Length: 423
Image (cartoon, rainbow, N blue to C red; front, side):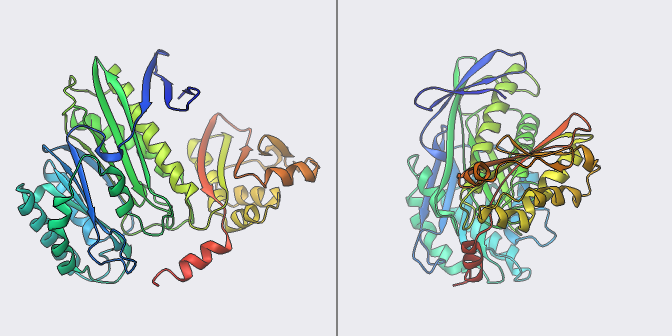
């Protein structure tokens, strides 16, 4: 994708497959920017801090929807229920609690999720099956159902098209900043908006999405087209990031499309679909980048590129092994340009490589060529490792396939945050 920004950083142009350009603009509003979406938030006492911990996303009409969830065999009851309901119908609302994972407390997890969503549906005057649920927080504690039920009236009363940012704030746990994005595109003369909000800073290395991610659009689109676009966007964004190599029990990513933009229905693989797809991909990449930048205790953002691989799988194996290596991540945290740790990570990845052909670069400065160190001057390398963003490139020179992964360094602060998580 070709991306060009205007001087104020707000206008993005991206290339379609036919090399023509379509205009896309970043706008305000988060998940409530698309027509017909409202959001609300409140504090119901799940978090000891008293910060908002209950959020609601609502569409004026039922939605086409698609989702992808954790591949962890240990799943929150909230995840299980949402998977079931997405398969059956057209959801209209999503309730989210933070501070409690609703996981590893037995079958009560699903019962509690059903009870909460049922009461929310009753108060919203919609079908109970049309309310999904997501949870995030500490594992092994029952949901405080009574507190949540008491908070529902305040939550629904707070519903507003101006509360997108408040929604993004209410779903946070160890996040230090809220994360949202909204863009608008043009589909045959109709303005179509796409938006998203995510929560995530740790336990990030899923094989599907990451933590909690919610996307909205007012596009009219076929369900299969929506599923395909979301699947491609997830693969190219949330599947390409890692903070600590650990997968959550609650990872959920859901996209709602209510059709209220009034555009001609988008079908798979058409010109309109290409425009829509690139916008969804852009939004997902921006949000996944925000997650890595907010990695628990992180000081540096790292882009790892492995190219010249025989297969895409080999490139991805090598890139993810580098990104998840504690030795690599602590090396970067310490500002030490020890390229040998990169070489060792690639060699242990299981990828089919020829070590005598491998090149390694730090921000395009060659530190290893054909399996041998280049004796690059240490001072420029130390300066590279003082930067907030570092690019590591590995060229295997064995084929044409490549992969890109985003990660962050591993600091003492990460250990402190996770050692004290329950308190």
